[in-house]
Image (tube, rainbow, N blue to C red; front, top):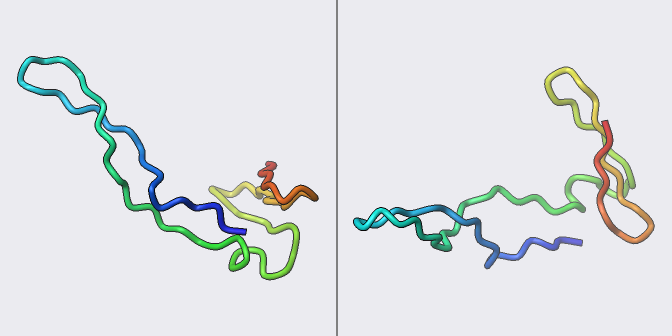
Amino acid sequence: MNTHNPSDFRYRVRRSEDTTARFDRVPLAVRTLSSNTLFQGEHEIGIEHHGALYRLKITRQGKLILNK
């Protein structure tokens, strides 16, 4: 299940000449992986990050949970 929406945007602050802050929708490139690619048929994977082990799980409802 890939819920990545290509029209998903992050907000950046852009200041104009009159020094007021304005929010513009600017697309940011994000490397996207399918959960099928990550899990390869399993329901839980381990992720090592800075020496700590994290567990990424798919719930019965199809949501993702990350635990340390």
